[in-house]
Structures are given as structure tokens and as C-alpha cells.
Image (cartoon, rainbow, N blue to C red; front, top):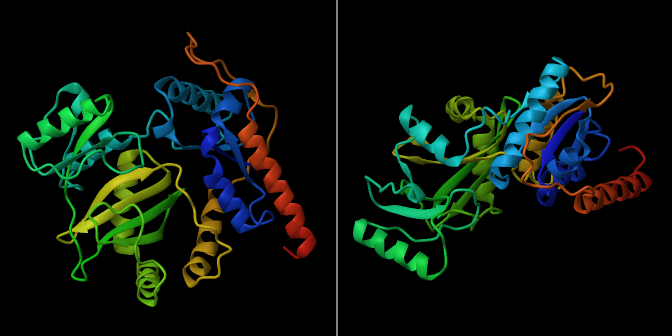
Length: 338
């Protein structure tokens, strides 16, 4: 069994993959919330993927590290992916990537009084996937005005960072953001988003013939990107996640790594998903090799003192599980061959 640990309110990512792949193809994938695991104080034996670090408190990450270390000590056959003691999150990762010469832009923690040494920059939350708090700031005067404005709007500096702007549009006028997913060491192109704005959250053009052709050509010739990304994931200590990146003057630049990425619904009838489906299924299957034989759950103690309490009942995860089994039953009735 391969257990995927997520926050309870963000478990739809792996459930969406299970629903899209078909329940008989991935019987070994078992989503579980941190809240459920921590409240039980017992971890089922199997392989584990730790995710969602940006949504966890420092105490929750300490608890996750305790679980990982306890599992390793109890059963060396258990494989731990994204060990909480090894994963670098956004700010330390971006700093490290600049130090090793992969990235060419800097990042500064504003709540520690650090000031950018290069401009332009933008301000954003360190643990967030939403738009930045500001547009591009071109000098210290604009930075000071932006900080004053944030204060008026009630936005605290805690866990706010200034990120140096480093992006470049292509000759066709689009900024491109690539998504390369690492599934236990197998690097796969997940998407290419194109937007006329420098901050690319969603693509403006995804379904025309040119975008489909561009994706398929890169998907079949991904070795050059994958070679750099392998170094990035090794630096980050991340075995499962998606790197979002772009290119500036031909150099690959990583913006972040999401350890709990949304995976496309592979049932969609598009050429790109026909290519993604077998590759991703094989990669997930490899993460579960060799399959763990199971056994008695491993008890663990949470670090003391316990500043946070974990709910004994996880209704959202239970609702997802109920929905999954209803979906599986209805699918099997429609097509017993699945």
C-alpha cells in the first residue's frame, strides 16, 4: 500500500487522480489526512508520501517527521517519500537554487528586516498559491510605499517575501510556465501554461492545435528539461511534487515546487492525456515497489507539549472516501471490464 498524506481539506488532488485513472488500476493508492493519522497515533504499515508542507504548521511538520522516523525505525522495508526532515520549502529552496547556480534571481524575507539587493521585485506570501500582494516594484521607494499600503490593508509582514522578478516572454508574446512532475524519480511534463501577463497562474490558450502540438513535442523530448529538474528535486529533498518553471535567456528558472499538485483527470479524451496516462500510472506503480507486505500498525507518540489538537473525526476525508466508493461501484456496473 502507498499512503498519500495530505491536509484534510486538500485531499482532492490525489482523489482526483484515483477517480480519473480508474479504481482497479491504482488499488494500492490510499489517501490519508494528517489529522486522521495524528489523532489515531498508529500508522498502518506501507510506503508513505508526505505532502502539503506549505499548508502545515511548524508543529504539524514536527509531528510528520516523528511519524516518518518511527516508521523507518520500526520497519526498514518502508519507503518514505518527501521526508519532512529533508524537504526544502519555497524560500530556502529558492535561496539554495541561487547559491548552486541553477536560478539567477534572489528572494528576501521581509519579516526579518531583509531588503532586496536587486530590483524589480514583487511581494507575496511564502506559503500561498494565490497572486502576489503587489505588482512589480522597481526601487526602494516603491517598496516602502507598497509596505505602507499593505499595512493599511491589514496585511502583516509575517511570512511575506520579496522575490526578484526574472521572467521573459517568448517571441509570440506569451509568458510560459512549465509544470514538470516528479513521481518517485520519474520526471514527466504535466502542462505548459501560456499567458500575456508575467504572472502565469492559468493559461489563456491551452486547447488550440498549436498548444497541443507544443505539449506533445516537448513531452516526447523532455530529457534536457528533466536533467536540470533532477538536480532541482535532489537539492530540494523532494521525491514527489511538481516544479513550476520558465526560461530566461535559455536558462531554466524554477519558481516553486508543489508537493501536493493537482493532477489532471486522465479520463479526458485529449492526446496529451493519452500520453500522460500510462507514464504516470507506471511511475506510481514503481513508487509502490516492492509492495509492502503489511502487518500490525506502528504506534507513535507526538512531540510534547501538544500545542495543537487534532480532530478525532475527519468528515471531509470520509466524504471523499464515500464518494470514491460510490463512483467505483457505479463505474463497475457500467463497465465490468474496468
